[in-house]
Length: 227
Image (tube, rainbow, N blue to C red):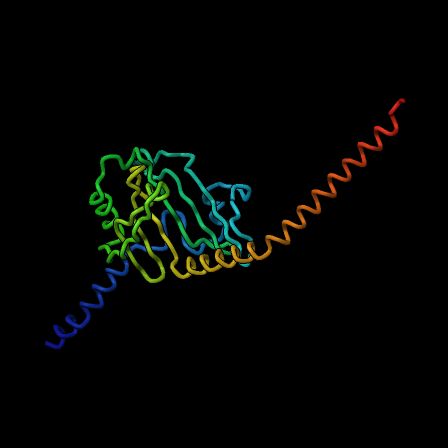
């Protein structure tokens, strides 16, 4: 009887261990992991620093890398990835936005896509209220979140764009994305505040360049002019 009670007490722990062992690490997508350095992602994608786009350099460094697989064949056939945008905050990866190739998702319903991801990430979480779209062309292809998974600081969202008929998967570090949004807003404020000073400096440089060009033309013509 004591042995039976012991097994009963250990059973929930065993089940928890099995579940934990089989649970997917939401922060890991293929060879890319949230929090990885910019250098690590450049190496993994065989990209160069020249391919990085700097969105803002202050108060924090915000960069993006747009990447498309050079080799689209896997053991099972064509790779489903059409392209990936990696977002970095101060040289750390905080967002992975995957766009699936239309040729690989054509004909698949939202349910089909969700089911394929449930097999990896488990049951979906509750969807947040979708923002109301504003009228106009800018909202025609705004992505809609189809399914959501949460694990600690990581959010995974399956999205679709009706107009372009594409699906995407966005893996985000919630806390670092919040920091990135604050840094972006601060950078825009700084740019707006310093815009008059930059414009004055630009005008001064343009005037100096025009004067130098005029002086050079005058000197050349003065030396070669024949009455």
